[in-house]
Image (cartoon, rainbow over the protein chains, first blue to last red):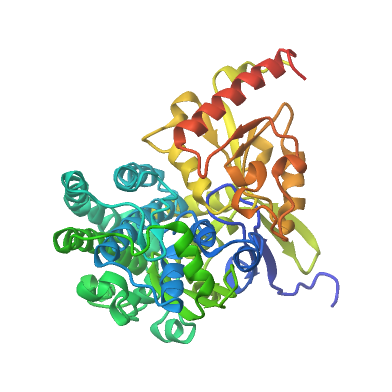
Length: 414
Length: 144
């Protein structure tokens, strides 16, 4: 190359693993051409806590249930729920009908809190902090309700093999209805903020598009897949627990707009409508909940003995707030631990869709586009920019990335 | 050293070392309108270089050990470290795991422990207040 000539090359931007926002550390390597993302590579493993190993070597199954709760602090019902379904299948245990309804109520409350949490984070990512604070204030209502019903804000410890550990009493029902009415009353307000606001719309429409073909090819699950027009929902396709009585329908964005774009805006629509759907499911559960016992085996030594003697395989499938969660369990007679335990969390599948979502995005759109799958979004925080041509490295912090995103919002508002 | 600013504002940096997100969402809940610690001047910042206090969560996964040390080194003195949640304090449900190098006080010095799985927002605020008091004593050289 002669002096003075320039050559076009791409940059590599590693994002993560340390960052100040929420969720787990993860690292993204973004291949950049100017401002445009060409390709993405994902490095995971920064949060590896040997959970499956602990479940197979150290814990008895009941202890593992509370370990499963700590796989993710946000989805702390769906993981133990999924494990419980798997173990109950393997050990041929029966769950009383009332317990199934209480499990569904807990799972739907979790979905409401998780989706509102996500909406706030998404608003923060586009620099709309007013909405972030507003949604998190609104979220405290469901946190209060969860604490009132299950005794704790985050980890509820409500599940047990063959049932649940806490009943919902008749005196609690008016308080539950009051919270649900609250969400019903503010739904229109939230809908206006997220779907009609100019700022939100211009930063999310046609951003982070995942086409229906890509969603099918990359097996996107949960709201990410549904926003791309794939009506896939475990609650609809293979109803488990009390969902069999409830007739849940998968929500796709064409219910509102008539078309499927598969962008961030569509993911907002899906999650927003699912909040409303969850409120309806909880109400229906409260009305239909039969009376009766909540646990099939109340004596802990007998339960442990039963699980030690049992042999068999089971697969739990649960629609978590982020998508389909699968736990595979194998029990061996005489073994006090689970013989095999394999967890497949929804974000693991959705991460495959990230390169497709981020392709051709600007760097300023990366935070919102990546956050839109509701992942372990800790990644978007510390960024090193390497110029391959010169070998020059410069560090972009999460703040810089966030600043770029905020600046873009301002730019577009002008 | 004149650090009167501590009387008004305390900037915190949140470092996740492999936590389950439970403590992390409670830290955010502390900063948002219901608990709203920003009214006391406590603010979450995006870089350890701006921080007075490190809020550390999680049991420290092996691949995060180096990052934890580097973040601690990047934080300017005087600084305090707060561990939030049982797993950062003594491993909790994750003790004996092969992929963990924690607890956090084995890697960096810790000043305030906030136990709980996860701790309630009120407990986190109480911990920050304790950290604040200790920082002021540090500045006055009452403790080293």
